[in-house]
Length: 219
Ligand SMILES: [Fe+2]
Ligand SMILES: [Fe+2]
Image (cartoon, rainbow, N blue to C red; front, side, top):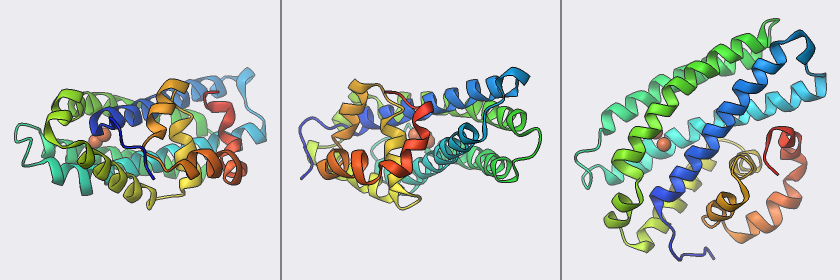
């Protein structure tokens, strides 16, 4: 059973945005470090970093799909002033940059870290104003609290999260989101997940899959 008290769609999506923003920033900082002759990572670190950035791309893409397919259509009539078209177009633009990002990771050429740095810098420049707009028009606590009953918040969060998880491997995606949040925010975000996931699957069964990303995650 899901814990239902006080869950809010806006507050939860803002946490997801924060986790993604942190991961984009970590990616940028690490690329800057790894470009330096003295900062070249060993093969194991590079492999872990590639898993981290690949998972980040999947999580961002899945989040866009969750908004395009579930959240935006459901809120469209209740929030006529929100720029849904513009936001959906921005998803397409970001997804094109994400495709470049994937290609850079897959080809892994000599100037890998500088190509990745260029792509992630462009992605951050699109991402930050995009989430600011979403916060202003859609995800503020006041807006979403007034829109739906507590049960509807839970239902939409569960539906969106299940749909997003279909876009990739939950054993990587969920720990990725949780571990890019500080412990307080992680606790708050965990409330949308079934306890078997947070208490059993993530810390034990799934850990061998996501543990290589630990050097880039929060404690
Ligand atoms: Fe969005
Ligand atoms: Fe969003």
